[in-house]
Length: 113
Image (tube, rainbow, N blue to C red; front, top):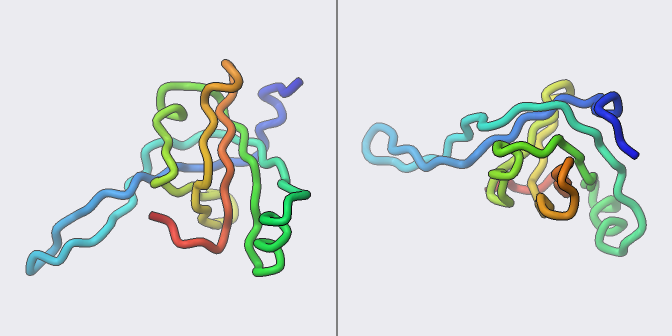
């Protein structure tokens, strides 16, 4: 059983938004949409995870509290570890398996958006 005391990490979730800059150039900006405490669960075992690890990418399952903001996270967004500054691409979001938690699979070293 997971308790709130297990949420040792601090993360933020950014949504990609298209912005028109000077001269009509379209760029993607990443405004922060949700920040919260989280628990990182090291992913191990599958061939895909092992192959990513050999390429220098880390894969984690991240557990955050269930709330409207957490349920709005999609695979287009990115996650930032605000303590270490690492950015992660969001691979999968599971907000229906558990009424108390949202589980998010993330991977470092991948292009977000």
